Length: 221
Image 1: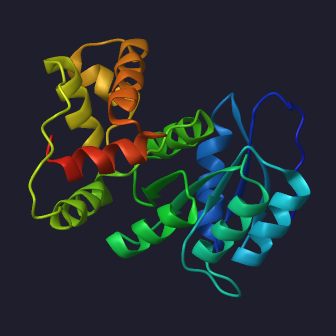
Image 2: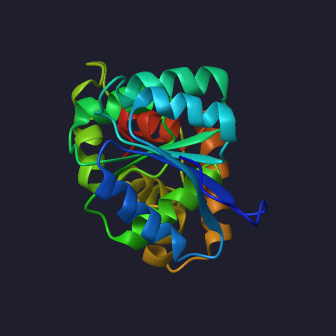
């Protein structure tokens, strides 16, 4: 079902969830913003693929468990066909299994449905900007899993970090967004982004998620 749009300069979003009231709640949250507009809605993974093909949204919000085709399978198809579309998983599943499956498939972020409305709106903006927001409710599960898979040889201590870089990296690994890290460390968001760029170069990583995984596996955090 397509919805009317008047401002093409905004962040165009497609919502896909098999529960009608969830779609309605998400639409309500996003409709209260000036920069995000919902252009279409669907209720299963196959509809997600069809709607992305039809509307080419900036961001797709999708659940992981749905009829016809599950969200993870849909994410794989969409990332392969439309890599420019950012995908935010919004789900009730607080599980490292679903989290890892979604991220491996190509999701850009993972937020639980009972998060504050403002957090979900912020996550949409973050994935659209290229960030990878992970809800703190599941971030600790990912951290525990990665720490449990460290090689027996021990941490790599060859990468030297400043105290500020260590603090930024620690909060990043806890699942905080740029704005949350900035607030916690009394920095500007531009300063946080500067440190993240430097950290990415030091660890030779492509994105936030790879930086988190590398830092945790190295034992530096």
